[in-house]
Length: 302
Image (cartoon, rainbow, N blue to C red; front, side, top):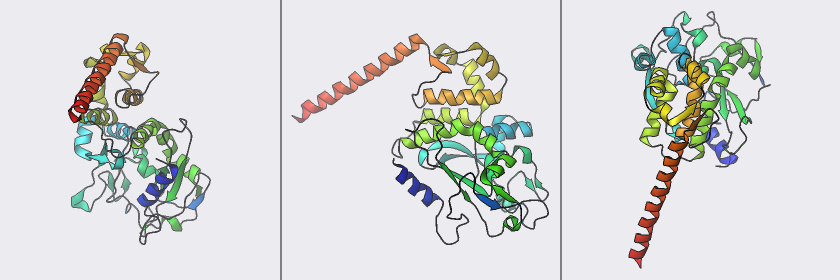
């Protein structure tokens, strides 16, 4: 997909130029400035925390479940709904709003956000949005992103005199750190998007992706209690770390998804040699079987 095609999709998603859109049709870079301040004294305080479509990143879930003292299973059951993400078809967890309370976020009261220091990256960015036009063929780490302002009609924060650059806002809100923690996950989403809409992720791959992205306890059990370690070579020091550290396990999971779902190479884990040989033999056998079937079909046409 060309950069031009991606830009068109981004523009459409942002409803660029459409009447009534809350998104200003102006692209911002990291040094662009805007005025904004949100605090309990502003008349619209917490009004933006309703009827939001917030996709939780893996790091969001880890921070929130730790804050609430919940297991991943219980957190997902109480506060999220599964969803397939846009054109990627990748399964993600969406924060569930309280429908019987006007679509209010479950963590917000009249006094503000009750999980503020652990709030999701989407909330940290507001009122700035981030769009990525990075393509899979580009070098890892090369940036091609732009930002935009989400200016809702009820918001009085834009009438304040506090001025920010996009980067100073990101640093103040901690969203730059969240971006760092979510970078590899975003790369996986971009990798899947580069395959095109017509390439559907198999059900087993979806299950793996959702487990690794949302449920560290289940993924840890998968690593240590299944045949995982009979299949992959993993450094012992790393294994000891991921046994206790959810963030380290999350990062390890991104590497695993690269290998298991997208067939990429990783320096963190590798297939054991005997498993690799078996896998290669299966692929060759499968290809030969497909070739014989095609030859039979070709003969039948003659």
